[in-house]
Length: 121
Image 1 (cartoon, rainbow, N blue to C red):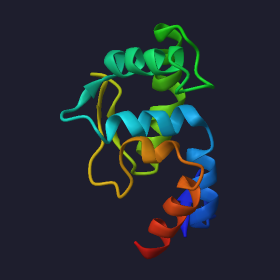
Image 2: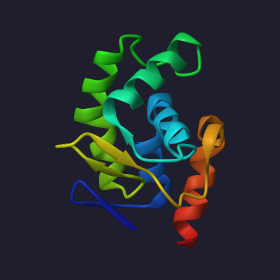
Image 3: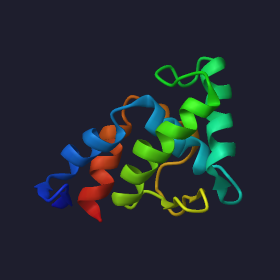
């Protein structure tokens, strides 16, 4: 069981809650292949480029809008669920030691894969 927003949730519910949006999975796809921590602005620019290329279909195309959304919604939620570490003051994002990497996060089976991993952990 995982506690999310003060409520106990089964791993598959956490997976759905955290990973339901393609933008969130796109963030993890980028971060799990980064060789170093990324700053929030660079991450937003990369996501905007992916959106323009059709690889992040639900994200705004303006990198400033993406950055604001990342800061207020996506990164804190991923940090709260221990999928990455986010320093909101300095805007630094670090993602290490996840069993799923790169564009595997964009696959339709990622929710099942993540729930399986959480169950085994």
